[in-house]
Figure 1 (cartoon, rainbow, N blue to C red):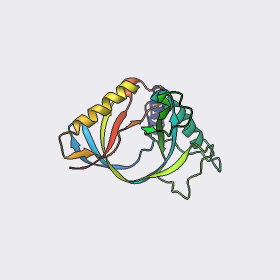
Figure 2: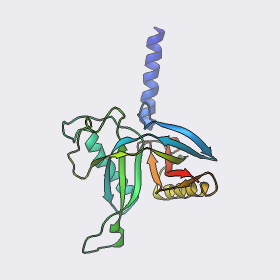
Figure 3: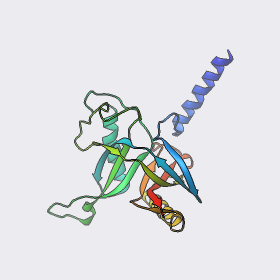
Figure 4: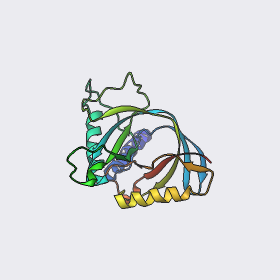
Length: 208
C-alpha cells in the first residue's frame, strides 16, 4: 500500500512539473567539472553527436523557433527509418555568417544562427537515423573544455547577449582564456516559468 501511495505521489509530482515545464529525466551530454572561476564553471565534455541546422532569420528568437521546428521534425520521425529519438537538453544556438548571394536585399540576410540538438549517448554514426530534411545534418562535436555561466529567466536576445558579455568579462583575468565563439544553451521548453528556466552562456577555453 505504501509503495503504491509513493508511486502515485511521484506520478503527481512529475505531472505537475511537466505542466510548469520542469525537466525530469531528460538526458544531457556527459561532462566533468574541472574548475570554478567565480560564477563560471569549467567543464570537460567528451565527443558527442549532434543534429544541427543553420537558419537565416530577422531575429535570433525567430531563428531558434525555426531551427527547433526542423530538428524536432527529425527526432520525431522525419528520418530514414521513421525512428523516434529521445529529446535531450540543452538546445544550442550560435551566431553564424551565411554566404551572401545576389541580389543583396539587406545586410541582415548575411546573419544566421546554427541550432543544435545533442543526440542521446547510445547512438553512434552507424546507428543514428539519417534526417530526411536536407537542411538538417549530423555532426560529431569534438571533446572540449567549456566555460559555462548559468542564468535563469526568459532567454530573449537582450538577456542572452548580456550573459555572453558577462561570461567573457569573467574570463578576462584568470587561468582560462576563450578560444572560440560564445554559444547559448537552453534547457527548458518555452512554457517553463522564467524563474525555473536553466540557460547557459558557453565558450570553449584553454589554459592561459
